[in-house]
Amino acid sequence: MGHRHLLAACAAELVGTAVLVGVGLSVVIVASAPHGPLASVLPSLAARRALTGGLFGAVGMTVTLSPVGRVSGAHLNPAVSFAFWCEGTLPGAALLGYVAAQLTGAVLGALPLLAFGSLGQQVAYGATMPGPAGIGPAYLGETLTTFVLVATVVVFVAHPRLRAWTPCTLPPMYGLMVWLEAAYSGTSTNPARSLGPAVVSGQWHAYWLYWAAPLTGSLLAVAARHLVPGLKELEVEVARVAHFEARRPWPPPRR
Image (cartoon, rainbow, N blue to C red; front, side):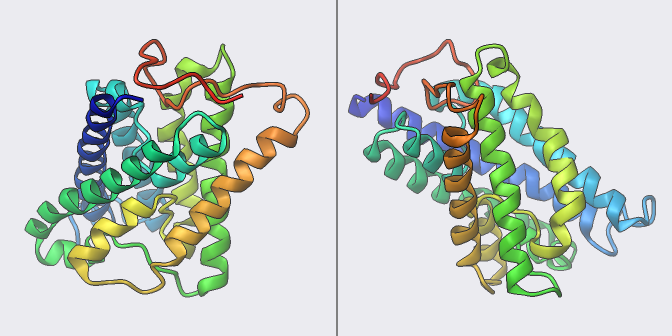
């Protein structure tokens, strides 16, 4: 991968992750705040969680399908980049650059959330923390939800007929996962998504979990793709979630 191509891809990851965090967590704040505008209209917390997850996934889908996503492949998540590195389609230098860009973008995208003031403070600006059940269930929840995310991505990307539909899986997937799991960990699945609001809110409780569990889930998802009959015959040929016609700047996969 040429240096200019890598820089352009990292810049796209920074911008895309900033938009995902800024817009996606704005949705989280408005929909989840106990005294927010949606609480009186939709009092069911479970329903608001499902709606929040679906809308967050829709933001991710939109960024993925945008021109920004075309430049970088729209990982927007260190766990996704790690999975592509494990699959042999993302070079180590690109992995480091992508993760640095994603983390920087997440912090920049979270700064405007401070404008929500007391409304944002009600939910720590969308920070993810273990729920009342504790660290163990939160770790398991993050591992399982990231496993679902990454397994879906690598299987769809590897399947010629499913590949184009990969971004469309995000809204229903996050709608369901947030509805089922948010009470345990907040359903991050993304170390960068958790970093941004942690910086602006100062809520760092068990932040390590939002690295350890997503990377565990990502590794398990890649391992499962290589072991499960019917999936191990597939091959992930490119480190992209969308715009598969734009193969550059990716090199041929390692054999």
